[in-house]
Length: 303
Image (cartoon, rainbow, N blue to C red; front, side, top):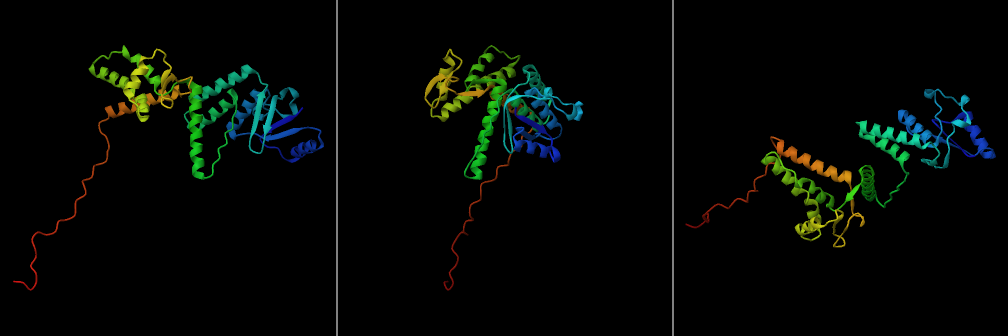
């Protein structure tokens, strides 16, 4: 069988022996430098061990090469490697242990206070819980490349959000559906009722603006969607039809929709409760050119 070795470093006599055995055809071996650095490297090595059903041999775990056996080796259907990247396909690790490791990483993500650490944990979670995809973005110029890269990052973030909390019908339909929850809600006083009415009215704005930008009457479209019995039906501006938005592929991540509503409420509350606002002082209109002096001056030589 083929042998893959992941180690912090392989050099000297060990490397020479592996190369010699490879050249002689005695052992088809692949030596790979362990990913990451420091504690992150240890965690990623443990992820790979659980994914493949192997054992990390390290001083911290009390293991050594002298005491290692064949039972310490993990298995995978395929390992694809190049100069920069390695992909383990269909690891043969225990499914329950993999699920436990996934839950552990999710807990660490919830407790993380660093965006960088959270991003790295998300990467580890994706590699353990799902497939691994490599998206290569190319362009003719640096400016175009950056623009395309931002688009891919936005799509990736939206997809990740959809995986976390699911999807809802797009085009503002989900917010229209949410209005039902406010219909029977009564505030304790007039101010609270005013706030409820404002929120209820604001939920129609995204759909209204989308349709108005398409040259349609937003109020009419909103009213028509509200009369639909199917909560997934909305207005598709590209086809000028009322369709099942999910079936038509017009969707939004639930997390993004929820976050937009929460952030809007937060900003509105901040403006309402603040004691002062900072703004630019309007400048006075530019003064016109000076008028010439009145009257006619005397002409020399005339009395």
